[in-house]
Image (cartoon, rainbow, N blue to C red; front, side, top):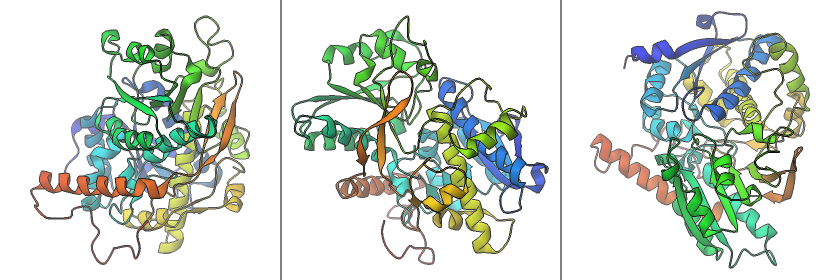
Length: 449
């Protein structure tokens, strides 16, 4: 299918090396630098772009091949995301970063026909963990379900006698397909834990009358899980505080993009972010040799869109993590295929061969940045232990123990979600009784995740 003119106009080249785009390995990143989620989308895109640009400047790309990274701006609009995807297929991209959980969810039905690997690091819908049924979708190191279940487990760590029994939980999420997707499983897990549970949907836009924060405050929950993995418009944390909800009751999954709240003196006049918590899988800050290389070769050289005075925030670091995943997938694919120039099928195999152990993290200049990650044909997530970090007013610190996602408790829900997705796709394509998510027998994984 030919790309739409609007998508072509939105594309621009961000070269991670000295070669022209036509000479490099083509990668496509769907960005949200404009629109209602721009605050979060910009920081995420900057971290990813800066890391890949650093590899281009320092190493000439990956494995001797320069990278041709192209951003396609979506503004958070699904129609533009689809147009950008079509342009990426036309261009021959070896992988695509969707930029949001909603874009990932919308693009899942397209991947197999186009043989396009899609990499949503940390914000992938639950089904993306199942490499045996979604062979072109990757969600390392954890899916959204893993993160919300970790937030729930964190409540148990801090409860009376390690139990949240009798306490109340509010779940606030974007009012969108991906934003609503985790609600049923979190409701079920909360019920098992004896938590009173209520969900609230945040609409896009700044309509105060439509905002649920006053209702959340009136319910006076013990804890609020604020799910930003599908993107949230405006300033939800400030809106929560304005409604009278203390931010130290909130655990975020994903980040809202309100990094200004974390800067010294930012909340002096109206609120304090001290005690705010977030679920994460990587370290905060920029005290790593790889970040020094980014500063020297990219930011100081004027090749970044990251303001020099800004410190690395939660979303910037998640962008760097996504860059590591892409680069490791390419490096593995080149080794397995025995060539520098690879295609999407090679890239898929390279991503499935990722094994980021402590030795490899050290080689990358990122000791202590993240935990070991190992993917496979069947497991496209890794489901690594997660942590909860708390803002002290000056820095993020880990609170509580590492939390391993409850794989066995999530399995029945995941099986049901995969079956429902297959049924929906069959209905949309008119292929009654078909299994559009399954791989062919030649490609099938030998075992489940």
